Length: 451
Image 1 (tube, rainbow, N blue to C red):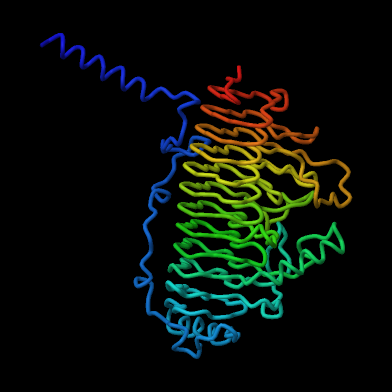
Image 2 (image 1 turned 30 degrees about the vertical axis):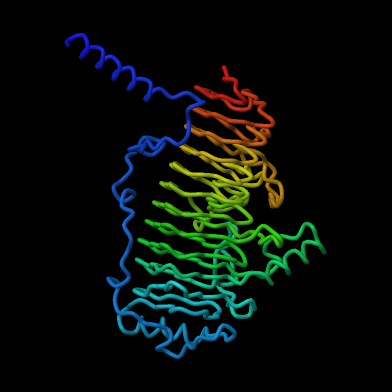
């Protein structure tokens, strides 16, 4: 009996040992939750709370149909919807409700203590006439300039929420057609040459939460968060087409000079970057007080359909630190991680970890100068850019190119770690000399371990 017991214990110990040992061929999706950010600072309990807000707790409901709106998908009803927002504000705050039906609107401006709830079956649809979006002080592409307002705007509205399982639709087709027509006329035209509104723009708001809604067909960026603290984006579905007509520059989530952001459980498929970290551009961008850093960003349990990159740093960014992307599935991304090195801007991308990823992408990691649009504005010395303490681990990916890198003398890469990775690639080449202090640990490319 004693021998049998010892045998059982030995088998159990062997089984446990086999389960904890990870080899590239066994990697699928490891659910390890780190207790700290990449630089070692603790992750606060705020990030662990993904509970949903009950809109009934936010105050009185203000259905727009009680304040002059009618169910008519052909009628612009900006004035009546804005009146509803203003009425809620005048009465101390509350929840503006879009009921079931399609409601067409131009730019809407939320006030302190007002919120948006889009019911199941409801569609808040943007006008496709740019005249319905006032030209105001704004922020776009790393510049604080006047630009067209978004469909949903919230500035200095702390605690702002968007809830409900309905849809906010940018109605972007005519904007897309206009952009591509202009690009045919001038292949070098910039994004701002064709007037297009964003879908959601949230500026200088703290303690923001968006949950469950669908954002689709934006004319420009789908959602943009600028100078915000403590933002949660939970279980959103953000989409725009890449065929038959491409929806240009419809980034799903643009994080711009923000601190403490949680993106969780979202599905993103857009014709540009899924999540882009921004913060300013230009030869003296770090001296401009309207610019700044993104810190403490967690992206987890998300799925990425077609996109130019799942996670992009830049092209308008000066400092991104403590970025953690984990437990995600990538099904049709051009790039898993993209570090855009902009020749006219000093950039520092540091302490970025991408882990526990499965799926498919064209490029595993992509680091190259961003030369589409840049302007040194007379600066004689080209600014230096740095990327360091970048970690990619516990990843099982099919891709065309594993190591998609080409840098200049002005791009400094150091302290990269690749660990527990299995990659099947058409081009599995790599060049260790590009990065100073690079570590490969248990990395298998096309069936061979990198030594």
